[in-house]
Length: 409
Image (cartoon, rainbow, N blue to C red; front, side):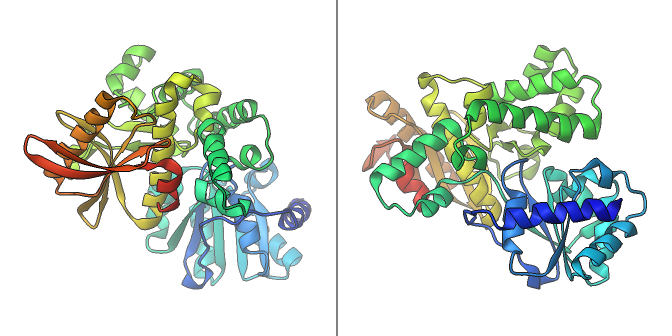
């Protein structure tokens, strides 16, 4: 039976390898000798990326998003079937590995035996508790998210302002999931389906929470309040659960990778951990499909899009990403090597002088406190350099349209 399943999956593997492919910014590293861990949300293109990255290699394949494989007790039967079908390949790709019980021990053993292992998964625990416990120092993380602006712009082959604006608008409103951005599927219905599947497969089936419906409602609350600080007290008051349970459910939701959190900036790590964190969605499509959908919230959508691009960049470059808040507030503080390297505000429309002055005032105060003069306001279309002074503090602030900012990101 196992061999039949692996054989059927080989046909699917070969079909996907022959399909058209848009290159991603990420790369595998097979020469490292480490287990390549491809992490990202469901349906973001992890499998497609892995298959096309290995297309010129001799590799075996097993997809554990299949109940016939997940129920197997003797894992050696899986590798034996792969060896028969693929003639004992050195490289093996395991898709959605987190569905296999005690997968980390299985993968660790194969890696010790000299196999080159590539795994994909849709839960952030792959790069935290589960993986760290058994594969410390033996994994190479590769991040695959819904398409970024630069990936889509590069694939378009059109270096025009019209194409830039088109890609920006589509990402802002519909997001970058492959099925939406490339195949033009109905974004709302498709993303609602992804949302439901993610909640069920990554939380309900995995953690078996006492109240699955409430988990989904909390996730919807987070989307509706995107870019806002997620207070446990607010979630607790709304759901009726105590803060400990609310915190546990939020952690389940964050682990699905369709959301990410930003802590409040502090030079003290303990204060960062204790701070109320802001929640953002990895893809703007969820905002329109499940959260709000109003032109009045265009600024919030742009903020989420900037947050998503910065988050992806921070994972690849090893940067730390925060928000800053004291008497004023700044959307994003980028920290690299223990030093603040950039402070960013997001404002879709700065035509109102009061709005612009408020944003520049916050940047100026944060700049002086954090000792960083790289100050940016990301806008929809405004481009200029402003000299701003506040209580004797003079700063130079760059206003940059999103499409120009992101191409240099």
